[in-house]
Amino acid sequence: MCSLQISWLSIILCYMYVECVNHMLATAKRMVHQKCRSQLYPFGNIKRILLSDDEVPWNVNISYDPPEYESPVLKNKAWADPYIEDAKFTPKFNSLDGNINRKSYMGNYLINNGRPLNPEGRTGLKGRGILGKWGPNHAADPIVTRWKIIEGKKQTHPISKLPILEFCGIQRRDCNQWAIPGGMVDPGENVSETLKREFLEEAFNSLEANQGEMEKNEKLICEFFKHGCEIYRGYVDDPRNTDNAWMETIAMNFHDDSGKLVGKFNLKAGDDAKNVQWISIDKNLDLYASHCSFIEKVAHLHNAHW
Ligand code: BGC
Image (cartoon, rainbow, N blue to C red; front, side, top):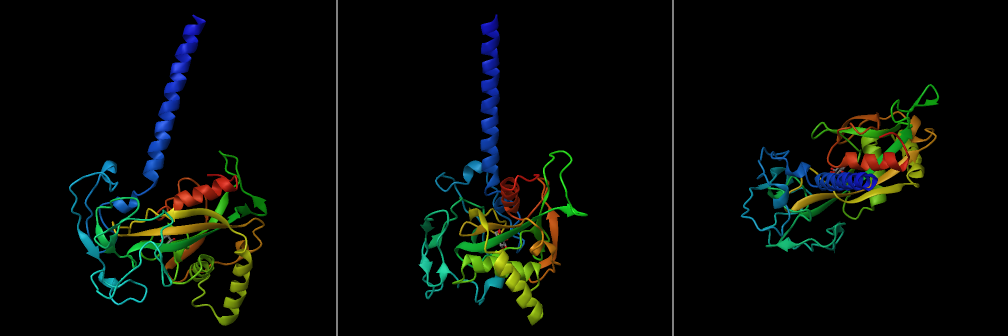
């Protein structure tokens, strides 16, 4: 009787374990490459072909003829590649091409008919959409955090009992969504420079600050950004991605444990940001692209509420 009970128990436990692993695998699969498959492309009123998860990998044979889109905004922009048909345009994909980094953090990507292929598979749209570069478009995301403190007391969450972290978030001008104040790495720019520059531009409005203010903020940020922790490096599930152009980023956390460094400064939105504020970190956040998954990693890193 007892051994019968034990074997039933082991069957149930085993079943629960398999269910749990399946759930984890399904969640992990869902985390990548979803937002860039939502039907309406965020610019140009273009509809992507809808694909099932199974149809995404390039090595799965399907009949596939997606629409093509290239935003007219890209024409003659210094930050954008020329048209791919331009005979003078001879990009060196998968390498450092002059001062443009065409390497992917995901390894070597495939080239088909002279066009780079998205390393995460099909997106239902070809061309480069609104993105300036064919292939990888590199960004950098500074995640600046401090503890939530009210009247000198560190706040804890009533359910998890863990302290609450806040991050400096911006509201993007292009889509109104809240996001990390990141931005594109300029040609030849070092990622650590991009992290500082974007934070100063978007959260301290450095582009419109007076000389004295700018110098003070720059000094503070330079010192504070000396100690960061890398959170993520790779492909981003960005709604602007297409079959031939996609976003990649390096996300770094800079934590102000005492709240006395950047934590106490008045934030001021600037450049691509229309609003800026300290946002309490919680799993119900709805942020741009893959930003929620970066923020979750930061919460776990500091053993904070999620
Ligand atoms: C944003 C970054 C973001 C990247 C990829 C850039 O435009 O500024 O914050 O991580 O796109 O989505």
